[in-house]
Image (cartoon, rainbow, N blue to C red; front, side):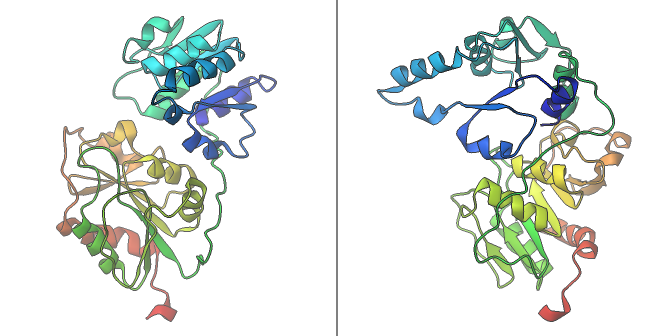
Amino acid sequence: MPAVAAIRDAHPHAQITWVINPEWAPLLRGNQDVNHVHIFPRGDFTGLGAPAGFFSWLKLTKKIQPDVALDFQGLLRSAIIARASGAKEILGLSDAREGSRFFYHRRAQVGRHEHAVERYLKLAELVGAKIGEGLRCPVPSGDPLPRFDDYPPFIVLHPFARGSGKSLSNKVILEICRAFAPTRVVIIGKSKRKIDIVENCVELTNQTTLLQMIRLIRTASFIISVDSGPMHVAAAVTDKLLSIHTWTDPRRVGPYNPDAWIWKNGEIIRVGELDKTKRKRGGRRLKLKDVPAIVDLVRPHVPVDPMLV
């Protein structure tokens, strides 16, 4: 989003089309930087009717005919889509994977230790974007949840991620809820796991839309999240965020917000202080013994409501 916003600022009269999976399209609701949304219904391209459906979609894609296509994803699929659009020029990242680089006319030179946001901004610079200190990230305001009140104050906990070893264990989730009682802890995200809850826990796993999740993040007093998409949404709208990292490098994929916080290997560090710390390979999962330090960080931002005591 910041990269596309920078492109819009550089080219206020350009027609910008974003190719996106349908499940993520709500993220672009109300986005004034994007003129058109072209849905890539990946889930429809399976089964016996997949070839016909895919070629029908390609025919629509060929009608876009842009002057330039930017491949932010850097995979073979996204590069093929860029080529199928009929773009006069295709731009991508220098370390794009799966042979996608062979589709590009120009490449933004990026380093493997650079943050993902900074990598994307370099791609935007190839089309004239000027990157300053202030970045725009127009995340939607979100949708309210039925029968959920913003008061009393609450903490959002997002404990699930697709990557191996990145999710929190059930024991840690339960301990975090207990440690913050009587303050409400609202659990969000998608998971097939059954979560045990205590009285102050509001279990909304698999029960919110993307836009409802954004509203919860915006109205929460603090967000605790594993390295995931919702964490990046939180980083765009608040600095009351703790991002939990196991094997991932927070310098590359952590919150792009200097005032947010990082947990890694038993240490809690402010994002703005990461450059002063030694880069370590690997990491470990968050354990029960780590919960008290998290409570010490978060509790001053979410004082116990006297009505709950």
